[in-house]
Image 1 (spheres, rainbow, N blue to C red):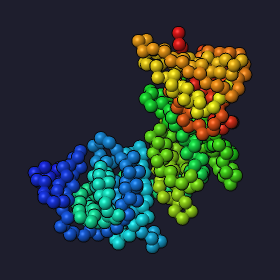
Image 2: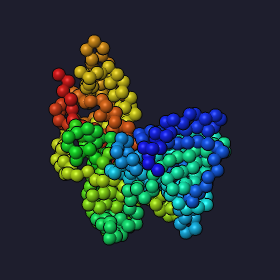
Image 3: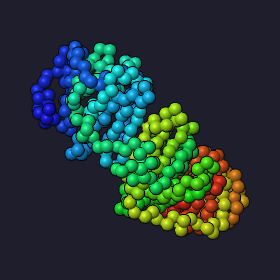
Image 4: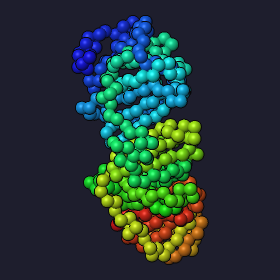
Length: 435
């Protein structure tokens, strides 16, 4: 059936009584008709836990395209499958930049099959049926039925075969005739990878003509893994050790888009889960799971093209002032000092007094007023110094540091400051002119 024809017809259907109605089409994607008395059954039929289905739909919706002439990219592919006699529901979505596949195991697959339906309608329906512990999905051709206790939703979709193919993770690792073998592969604990991502993702450029810094650099060499991000005014670098069993894995260097890593953070379920990472010349793949379910969720993304800036060159080597402070005390002081800043006077002045082991933070905004906050330092080495920073850049980094004791190193008012936690995290931030 032609989607345009469906749209024209649905516009003339009135709202029905009780729980039977037609939902108007969105973006020309067809209509959703609800009729609790309809009894059609399709070749695909599955009964699934509503909560688990909602979680999966919310996750894959992160890979659904917004406005696009390719309607398949605004849909979710729903496939009922059986693996080794065990049923599961597989939800897939892609916007042509990133792709996602999430498996739902809390299901009873009565008949395998697949369907392709608008993501916004699926998400709205599953979320609205919150009184039902389970939902029944069955599909025939391009029509999917979703049934609750007292409602039936009939969704017009599209041919499942029109959905762009998403490679299986195992095929990427092994390589097939259609899929080049990955040039780098390693496994890592989800909690450890999440820490690396969280400590760098915030420093990426949101909008910048230098496309290569709109992502995070991932480097894996020997026993170490490293992630780096910068927006030109600050840089975050986080390192960690690779498990000993993976020491011989090939080296990897690639730039992963910000959006892909933001979606990856949403896929984490258990810090002890295993994340398998495979990198090809143009894409990166993440597979999350456990020993029983090794590919619970798979995310793939195109890589950012271009060369990442030579970040080692911007790390100061001659800092002669060292400050040790309490993370929470500093975060509170910076937030309060920032209350009297504006677009014209965005910086906060930091006056370090080594003799008194104190830091005075001040801010001033024309026609608003002034702020002054004092915080005690754990220790201070070097001459006294005054320097200005964008308070948001200090607050951002303190949010991703879990350690209570933090080190800051300084040189002069016009040189960048460095914030460190041990040897595995380093943050370089440029000062602001407060004159």
